[in-house]
Length: 72
Image 1 (cartoon, rainbow, N blue to C red):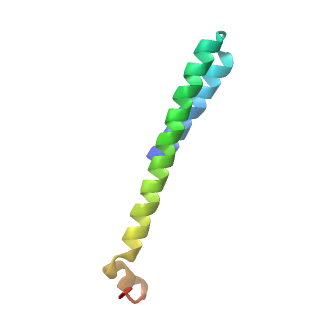
Image 2 (tube, rainbow, N blue to C red; image 1 turned 180 degrees about the horizontal axis):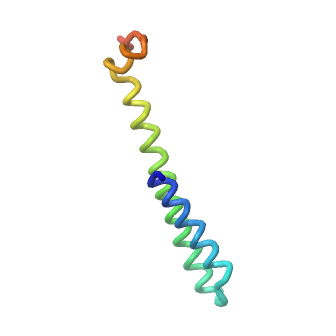
């Protein structure tokens, strides 16, 4: 399980707790926490995409895959 998956799971748990909360104040706080977890999940997703993209652009990996390195 990735960090992104963990963060999304935490967000889902906060939403479940918010659904069971009695006071609207508690619901609002729990939903705000869920939004924070989703924000972290989005950041983790973006970082993973950048990491994977940069890794596949590495000349040694391109050579191994049979691609020519980009020369600009």
